[in-house]
Length: 634
Image (cartoon, rainbow, N blue to C red):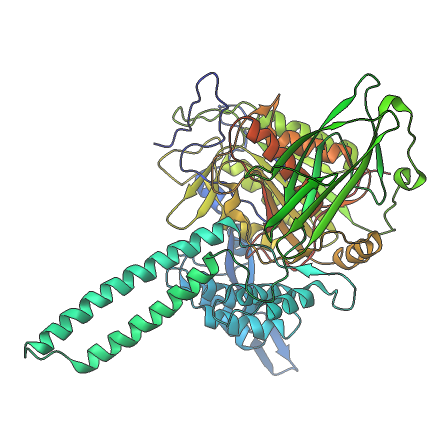
């Protein structure tokens, strides 16, 4: 049954229709939309919406004339564009076989053989995806390498991920980081990058692959025993067939053992994991270069400190003024501090299992007697960088037409308020959709695809129901005209990723607040080292502003998320509004994620609910490197 869980009056509603999952492309999109249950003027049919999807299109060759005697036709050109645009330009594409290995290769293989780096990357992605067959990671690595050695950043990112995961090539963290750094273009700068941890989606896929290989080994062993029994009984067991089965079983056992190592969560030798991060939720202690003075109410003699710690290498200890702090499974901590009349310094120190150390320090001032130091109050300015123009698509779906799909309470309000925040504070040009149909969403994305240039930035925000196809870990957004037992009006993450990949926009971030939204992310982006100096961060900004990025910030992983809990907003939307509202300087998506994840974890824990936001590049969306930047108005 597709209907979402209908909570009892005392429970928090979930943005989950049951098995649905939301898609997060690497673009950042904020979505707020408005539509009634009645058909809207110009609203398209399912067939018309399909014409807006991106296809592999072969454009006809051009007729050229050589001198006065000879006319010839040039080779056909392969592009990714909408089906409608392909038809208008007289191109050729396959309408109903988009998941076919052979069909996709027919479009891109010839230009790839001719040395086209983009086509070589697409061929590598076809082999890595499998498209109806088992993935061929070795072939994918071969094609990625050809494009990577030409300096094509998306291929360098993809090849680095294969080295990080040990797929088709020996697992080699050093090679992975080398390719990530080449893609970033910051090889000569003193900027440290560290690999991301495997995403939840990738871990689930790895578990499925391991189960399949274990089942295949069991099946082949039974077949082998049968053949041996036949040979022992004088019925003519085939010795050659026995030998082939033994070789195949050994190969599968070796692959399965490699997968178990990857699932063990222990980083391989040579991998440098990020240092711990500490976020202070209460009192409000913004990240600064010096100490921050926090004034308390004059009558108070005690202050409760609430925060969140994250240690990818494993948390060894967390202390507050040298006293050990207990930490929950979600990384939350809470402690009460006595405030002395002259003020009390608070130093919170996190140490991880690999020796990494992070400290956050501030002062609690009793009765307003203390004053902030010049270092604490100094405004850090961003260097002069042309970040380009900013656009946003915000979508909020509350009211679903099919009664089997439970209505939501806060999605439209979330999208509306986030759209206003982007307009007022960050100078975005916002397109808002409320209660949007599939055609509404695809039409808006197609309009932006035609409008945006390589100097523009796009944020896409979606709040609504999501659905997950657990057979292939593929997520979907559910427009308001979605049906519970038919995917005709769902929007898959594959289709969204193709649209994002075909856009010329420089930076795209997708922000998805729906169930199973974590199915969009992947771990192939090296991220910034904690504790980076402001000067190094500015150097990184200058290098990244010209790089194409496609990232996704999701409200959770492969699980339901809360629809409320933040007053008039979901806890994720409230945290996003708080973080963006407090921004006083240019901030990147990674910092927004760090601030949001701590707030969401704390609020969800108060509701006895586990919800962990995620942030990563969108796979196959053309991500090169870098991040999405939020630039407040001057």
